[in-house]
Length: 114
Image (cartoon, rainbow, N blue to C red; front, side, top):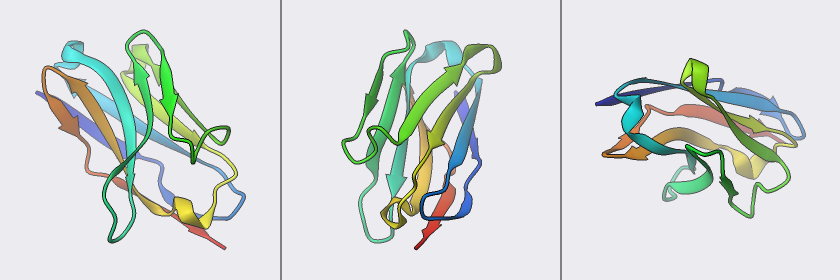
């Protein structure tokens, strides 16, 4: 089993920045890739960014050039640096780990005011 705990959400004005963190514990050796998803009210959960064990990254078109996903293997932590935030980025952000299983954190709220 893998446990994921997110932090770092909050309220920020448009144009501002936030950094989300996701700390993994448990059978982390079984995880091949980590990702961040967002879910706005009334919408489906959407993929924001991924990072593989080898460090390869992927970004949704809507966040390219603004968000950066990274990982600190020593601390079992994945980050999402979010810059130039827009009101449409407002959502609950979830950390996801994929490997033997598919694991989710509890989510952290990001609210961007106009």
